[in-house]
Amino acid sequence: MADTASIPDVLVVGSGPAGAMVARDLARAGARVCILEQGSGPPPGTRLLGLLRRKEAMHIAPGVLLLRSLRVGGGSVTFYHTATPPPLAMFARHGIDLAAALDRVLAECPHAPLRDDLLTPIPAQLMQAGQSLGLPWQLLPKMINLARCTHGRCPPEAFWSAHTLLEQAVVQGADLRTGVQVTRVLFDQGRAIGVEARQQGTLHTFRAGRVILSAGGIATPAILQRSGVAQAGEGFFCDPLRIVMAHGPLARQAHDISMSAGFFNAEAGFMLSDISIPAHFFRAFTWAAGRPDQLLSYGHTAMIMVKIRDDIDGRIDPHGRPWRRFGPGDRLKMRMGVEQARAVLKAAGAGRPYVSPWVAAHPGGSVRLGELLDERLSCHSPNLHVCDASVIPEPWGLPPTLTLLTLASDLAWRLSRDGR
Ligand SMILES: Cc1cc2nc3c(=O)[nH]c(=O)nc-3n(C[C@H](O)[C@H](O)[C@H](O)COP(=O)(O)OP(=O)(O)OC[C@H]3O[C@@H](n4cnc5c(N)ncnc54)[C@H](O)[C@@H]3O)c2cc1C
Image (cartoon, rainbow, N blue to C red; front, side, top):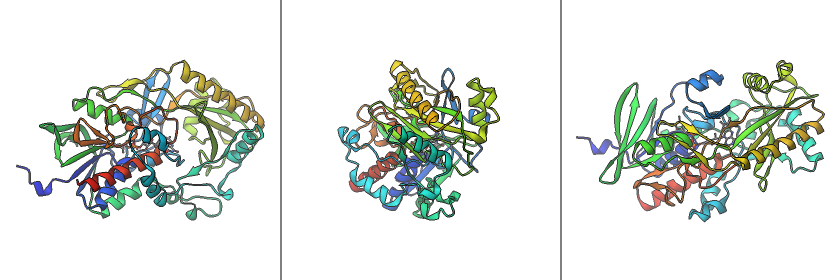
C-alpha cells in the first residue's frame, strides 16, 4: 500500500514555462510538488537530423516542419525571448481575469525593448527600412535582463529561461524528476489519482492529490487521449512562419538577437520581424528555395520572419503525431506578409529575395479553454488540469510565453486560495 505521507499534493507534467511557473508558485504556497519532465541531461544540439530523431522537429504537412523543445525548461531553452502580454479580453471572454496574475509576472520577468547599444546593424537597418515604408516597425519587448548586458553584448545568463523558476521551485521543496515520460493519467472513481510514466524503459506509477498537465501543445492532448479524453487534439494552431532572405550590404553579427524589432498587423493576422537562424538551417532553407547561388552568403544575408495567425485545424493523434492542412485564408495571410517583407528588404538595399519553406513554432489550442476545459483549467475530472499552450482558446499568432506564465500563475493562485 502506498505511504500517503510520501504522495505529493500535486504532480506537474512538463517543465516548460507554464509547468515551471505553476510548480514554483504552488511550492511557494506550501504544496508538496513533484515535477515529471521527459528531458534530461545537457541540452542537445539544434542539428535538423538530431531534432527529427528526438521528435523536436516533426512534419505536420508536406514540407512543413514543426519545432518544439523536449528538454528541461521546455521551449524557454530555445525561444527568442520576445515578450507579448496576453490578450486579456480573449481570456475574459472565457471567464478568466488574468490582470492580477499579469502584474505579478511582469514584476518578476524582464520584458523591455533592447537598448540602442544592443541593436546590431541588420536589425537596425530593417527597422529603418520598415519605418521608411510607413510600417509601425519598432523595438520588441524582450525577456532579457538588460542590466547584465554590457559593451553591446548580452551574456547567456542575461537571457530568461524557465530554469530560474525550476531552481526556485526546488529551493521551495519541489521534487524535479527528469527522464520521466508520462504516458497517461490514472483515475479512480472519476478522480485523477496520478500518472503512468516510462523511466529508463520501465513503466512506473506516480500518485498525487492533483495532476497538472503542462507537457506542451502536442504532448498534452496525446496524453489526454491515452487517458480516455478522445476529443483532445481535435484541431490546433501552430503560428506558421516563413523566412524571407536576401543578400544585403551589411554583415551579420554573431551576437544578433532574433526578433529585436518588428510589428504585428493584428487586423491582417501576421507579424514581421528580423530573425537570425543557425547556419545549418540557413543552408537547408536556401537549398530548399532553389538558390544554391546563395549558399555561401550566410554572413551577409538579411532575414525577415513572417509569422501568421493560422486557423485551428488538423489533428494530433494519441501517439502525439500532428497533421495540418493550411487553407486559403492561411495562405493569403502568408502571401501578404511575404510581399511586405520583400518590400522591406528592397528598401534596405538587399538583393533578390527568396523564401524558406513553412515552419511552425507555437503549437497550441489543442485542448481549448471553454470546450474541454472550464475556467479552473479542469478537464474530465475536478483535480486534473491542463496548463500550457494547449489551453489557448482561439487562433493565436503571438509569442505565447508571457501568456503561459500568466495563466500558470493565475491557476496556482486559485488552487492555493481554494485549497489544494
Ligand atoms: C524557435 C522558437 C522560437 C520561439 N520564440 C518565442 C519567443 O520569442 N517568444 C515566445 O513567447 N515564445 C516563443 N516560442 C514559443 C515558446 O517556446 C513556446 O510556446 C512555449 O515554450 C510553450 O510553453 P509550454 O509551457 O506550453 O510548453 P513547452 O515549453 O513545450 O514545455 C513542455 C515540457 O513538457 C515536457 N514533456 C513533453 N511531453 C512529456 C511527457 N510525456 N512527460 C513528461 N514531460 C513531457 C517537454 O520536454 C517540455 O519540457 C518559440 C518557439 C520556438 C520553437
